[in-house]
Length: 345
Image 1 (cartoon, rainbow, N blue to C red):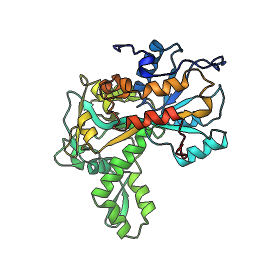
Image 2 (cartoon, rainbow, N blue to C red; image 1 turned 30 degrees about the vertical axis):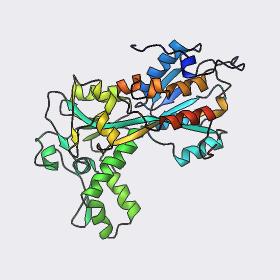
Image 3 (cartoon, one colour; image 1 turned 60 degrees about the vertical axis):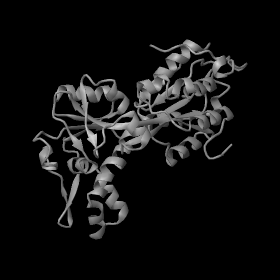
Image 4 (cartoon, rainbow, N blue to C red; image 1 turned 90 degrees about the horizontal axis):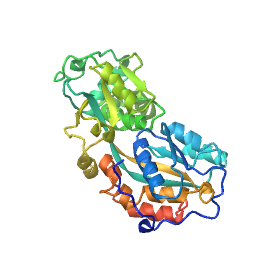
């Protein structure tokens, strides 16, 4: 990869500790497919620049990664879980039940969720309401919920082409799905007045929110359980398809994909950094503190990942599409100090 080697001394990263004689000498990472390319870049650079083996990085989705992370403490369990959302309270509880009580939460930066289609297809200018109308399982019409039967985009919005609705969205094990449901589908339901109408008709708020975010299962919307390469493959085989991607993946596939605007804003690193683009989210990884000092290189890997040279605005992660965190220095100090979630120390 095109990455200038960084000296460990320049990053003030400590040498391997005396506890390095562990049965497992590689840092083990799993989780988010959105974070995967960033973690892979870091792992490769880490292996090139340090006297530790290259960490093993696997995907599988945020939920799957956090589930593995919470299986317990010890060399047979992973050290780091990547996530495109914050860890949930029920996951923290599951971790604690299995002895994983000291967790370090690391925010690496920000990414945008984009809507992209075949490079030679029709162009779209979406709003969240368009996606709610296209993919909601039910619509609230004349005081009742009825099944969504819209089949072409012009039925959603007369300004759109009469193109079949074929959406490829992240499966439920992906953190991106949660963000998509909340910042696009639920937002569209609220902005269009549909949630308010349900509540005015006597539907309680929790049920209305649940109905807003329920996705149709009649084949118009397809869950993608793999990573973004699978979504791209679906679009290549169905030119009417529109997929949900991370900004970085889209920016590395512009020869094949065109991106839609959302609420009048074209997604870009600049638009996400400024907060102008409405569908963005922070990205994280979680470290098992009990493994620091036991698994060789774990502390060094975490510090290297969020160093200025790697995760800063001029680093390789930004070149790939990550929006650098303006509070990166705070994150660096938190890792150096070993601050765990909920402790403040």
